[in-house]
Image (cartoon, rainbow, N blue to C red):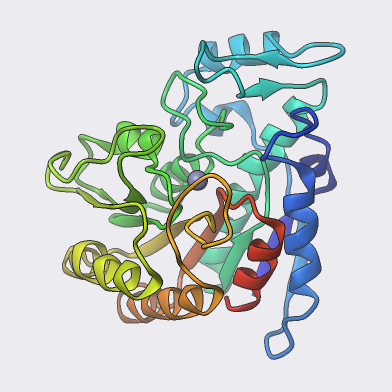
Length: 302
Ligand SMILES: [Zn+2]
């Protein structure tokens, strides 16, 4: 297994008491040390180039975003009530490394067919084409999907999102694109408010909204029936995962009761699909997950 990460991703600061904090990455990198049976290679994420980011986000959007980065302190980029998507002086490096991890992972994936995990922040799945949202600025997984298609002529790609929040950004970017399937299980209603079952794109969007209080067993069954079965029929060449661990019962931002062992079963089911259709080609991206103990426990099972 290859893990991409970078010190610059630790430097993104959102203020004290903000859930999206550097300790999340520290927990993950700590827990990786306990994974015994798999050989893990940790690599530094490069910075993504603006040319590649432009496959998804117009240059003007990125330039405007970076022009708002403050010399000191924090600047919000969203209007109320979402004023907690913040830029700090070190944001540019973290954002470019987070996106660049996916690009380097894509190059490795084509060469080595290995499973790759991008342990980076800021996350990406709430970032829309021209809108930062929900702690996200660039949609890391979307840029990676487009890069795989443009550079390596990959045809069909599936994105599976088991973060407890709906990936409104990923859905918006690929809503009319039959070459990308997007399947998401998420608490509903909850931030960001999208992800109803009748949002189906051009038959390529598979939303599985679940109620607050759902337990791990039901979470796995619903994911299998409403997302993985449809991805199986779609027959993707590569599967990308928006891996958020905030459906965990300990997470402070949601109300779903997935346990650490459930993540093991869930990722095993996804890995089966990857082996059937994709010759083992899979990249996972860290999205949410805000309880440090839960993050560490969930990661040990992957
Ligand atoms: Zn989330």
